[in-house]
Amino acid sequence: MDEIIIRGGRPLAGTTLVSGAKNAALPILFASILSPERCRLENVPKVADCRTARHLLERIGVELVELEEAGSAVVLRTPTILSYEAPYELVKTMRASFLALGPLLARFGAARVATPGGCAIGSRPVDLHLEGMARMGADVRHSHGYVEASAPSRGESPARLRGTRIALPFPSVGATENLMLAASLAIGTTVIENAAREPEIVDLAEVLSEMGAHVGGAGSSVIEVHGRDELGGFCHRVIPDRIEAGTFLIAAAATGGDVTVRGARSEHLGSLLEALSGAGVDLETEGDAIRVRASRGLRGIDVATAPFPGFPTDLQAQLMAFLCRAEGESVITETIFENRFMHVQELVRLGADIRVDGSKATVRGVPSLEGAEVMATDLRASVCLVVAALGAANTTRLQRVYHLDRGYEHLEEKLTALGADLRRVRGPAATFAHTFGDESGDGAGSSGASNGSVEGGEPPVLHAGARGDGSAS
Image (cartoon, rainbow, N blue to C red):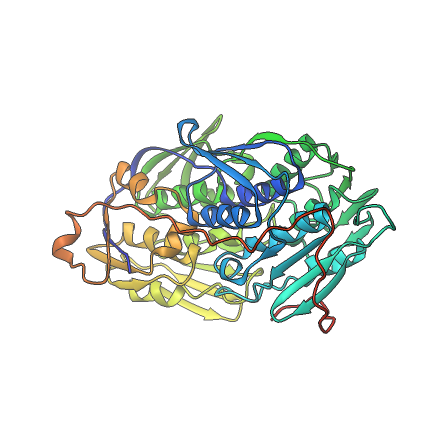
């Protein structure tokens, strides 16, 4: 298992460029299922989650070509499909695979998608997705760990969903995306109330509108999707990754550095910029560039995570690592996921002073952190430990770094270019002595074989099972 060795204490300095947002790329990749026409997506980050999405798309029959010469661009076509199934072996490695449900159901009238269940950072049920599909007329069943859904039949006409009004009890990003995808080929108009407002939602809406679906209200709490009988292709460039941009801004501040992050959109980072400024960090914004310079006398702040435009839960761990060195006391309240403080015990191993009480973590600043062996528990916790180790004295060994590969493109290379001293070690037998002579990189996964061709326009007969309430544990 790979490890990363980090020799801390070096201020980061220079300029870095943000990659495309994986959380925007993933739903757009699945949107290609909605059309038989050519779909081109640019600025797709080369991360494990996007590779998993491509494997799943190819498995169900999407024709996919990666254009290396164009730089992180893919072209997709779905004239027909081979399978209606998103298997557990792929869904369990990436929850976003569940986004195959909406487009498969909307265009082909049927879908069989494994239920992802919970995850390391907390329970993330898909009941909101399923209740919304049911309101659009879908017949939803649970069978042996899978959701089996079919669109209502209309006599001799193709089975199709129908537009309706859906009120979400919580502004779930995944549910909002899945319902937008499904509604784009539904009959009539679908209104999603209490919709998620994240920039990734707006990016998906722009794609669906380009395909012909006419989406209004994206970025607000009410989204209207005017469905069409058929959709065309698209050519779109993925927005910059606001979480990656925020991670580099925090890392620069945590190391006392001077870094310019290019390709960032300050309007996507308002809550983070406000938090860093409140802690005493100097910030300058010009166009798509944000410069961060850490001054002396950083001070503690209080932050609570919230749906956009609030402080993102995906930056909570990184900010905590930064606040470990701020003077005084900080209180971080996590309102999104119940288990998203698992990085705390690893930060304590580095010398942090943190106390957790339910959804609140109290961080008392310490003069310095010390290197140690630590272990990542999830994607954002892993990069939180990288941030802490960069500002710590001595050497830190970070284990289970495969989490990083899910969401950060060329992280080691980008940090090294900013002056960080770190290397990836291949395999469990690597030693400190060998570390700094090895090259880093990551390997791609392999796709599975298809489940057999599905011919014609009729959906398959779905196996009947006990009708569920759409909830997952």
